[in-house]
Amino acid sequence: MPIEIVEKEHISYLNIINAKEDHSLELRTKLDEAQRLGNEFKAKAVITFNTTIGPKRVDTTVW
View 1 (cartoon, helix red, strand yellow):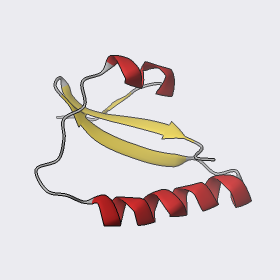
View 2 (cartoon, rainbow, N blue to C red; view 1 turned 45 degrees about the vertical axis):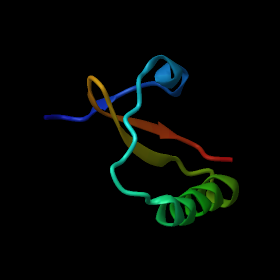
View 3 (cartoon, rainbow, N blue to C red; view 1 turned 180 degrees about the vertical axis):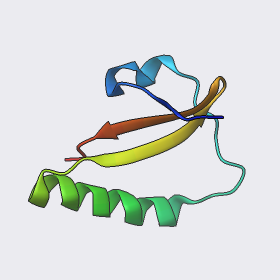
View 4 (tube, rainbow, N blue to C red; view 1 turned 90 degrees about the vertical axis):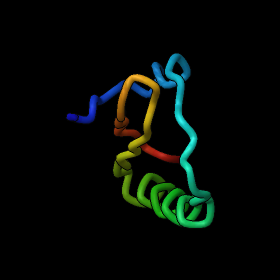
């Protein structure tokens, strides 16, 4: 199934599915790296997540 790209403004309308395992520590590290990319290099991060209607992706700058 292809991953649909969504606008960040539309994320609040989606029903995001929680992961079966806790990945908080790993995700926190990745979030910190994405924030550094946004602050220092003005680069966008790719965030992928699962919803009730399938996987979604958003490309955004993390500040």
